[in-house]
Every structure is written in C-alpha cells, then in structure tokens.
Image 1 (cartoon, rainbow, N blue to C red):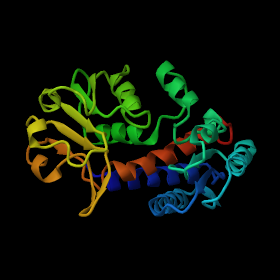
Image 2 (tube, rainbow, N blue to C red):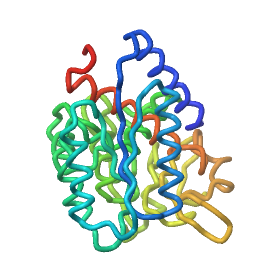
Image 3 (cartoon, helix red, strand yellow):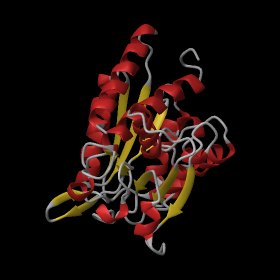
Image 4 (spheres, helix red, strand yellow):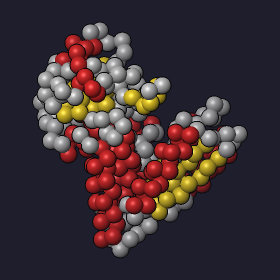
Length: 280
C-alpha cells in the first residue's frame, strides 16, 4: 500500500478542486517552536505539498527560548485571523511549554490536525469536525487498496489519543463496521490476538514489534509506528518477515507518513468550507 502514490493523488485532486473554484486562498498555518530537526523537515514537507495543492501557507517559527505567553500569542493571532483556515502546532514543543494549553487555543474548525479535546469529542459524538490526520490516512489507504472492513476483525496496537483511540473509533463506526480490539504493550498473548485479525494497525512506537508470528496469511498490515535506531528509521512492523505473509502491507517509510500530510491538506480544504470561505 503506497502512501506516496496516494498522497500525490490527493494533492492533485485538491489542486484540481481549488482551480475549479477559481483559486480561492485556502490557508494552512504552522507554528514551530524550537530547533528540533525532524520537526523542521516535517513542516517544510507540509508547506511544499500545500503549495503543490494550490494552497497558501504561512509559517510562524519561535526559538527554543520562547515563553508560554509568546507561543500562545502566536497561536491566538492565527486563531483570530479569518484568512487562516487551518492551524497546525508542530509537536513536540520544548520542555517548559504546556502543549495542551496551546492546542486549546485552536478553534475546532481550524484544528486540521484533529488534536484538540473538542475535535476528539466531535469524533466520538459523530459530529462534523476534523479527524486526526494519521488515523484518517490509514482509512484512506484501506479504501484505496480495496481492503474490506465490514464484518472484519481489526486489532489496533497502541492507545494514544493521536492514533490508537481515534483509529478504533474510525474502524468501528457505522459504514466501516469492523469489529475492533484495542491492544497495547501489556496485552496478554499479543501475537495470538493479532493472528486472529484480518487487519492489524501497529501504532505502539516499538521497533519491529509485529513479526511474522503475529500475522495470518492474507491479513492487511498497516505500520504507523516510527522508531529511530542506529540502522535508521524503522516501523513497528518487521517488514522483511511480514511482507510474504500479509495480503497487503505499508512500507516504512513511504506508507502512513505521506498520508498524514495528504489528509492534513484534505482537512484544511474542509476547514475552508466549514468557515464559509468556499462553497460547500
């Protein structure tokens, strides 16, 4: 399941839609605090793809020594600006900054990363809002590559509010109709549980946790976890041992990571609609 390919299809579709609307200014704004190198790369990639999609992008960068008040002021200004449709605060923020207090300043219609408690509440309640980008990207991959979910058994490994919990909600909601089990590092006989699954979503952040012993023949395996090792970036799935058993599998990198950016842009376009800046 090629995330790069699908992301580029999404970007092209957004560009075509914006062009058809006579190029309204759909604006994604990012806030980066500190000098974390991976975060700088992630933000650059998001802006590059936003521009390819025909969007306007704004960036606010604050130093490692930025205060809580300065960060909150930057986010508050973007929240109050009607020309900004989506706001993304790149995480992690430096030690000493209360990330939750910063995220709370983002209005739900501009929370295109789907990280705030109000966005999560809307997802739980089935109300209009933004779904976190990585779980949404997983759903897009499953749909694009024809992975059936209705009546299927899915195991989500990992219980973070960023991926695991919203992923369970998305897989189990009406229209998707999977029977979902939430697992984690303390789940008894995790490998045995996963062998019963038609779909495995690995999002525990534990390098090469999912081996061939976890996977039944033909199962779909989606790798969300990222670990940095001496050998480079690896996922939660031992790709080499699993790929010959799985019916479908995402690579790492090149699977869910690109889809996170694609879904961020989809959410930004949806945000512009929610705000009435473009036609519904």
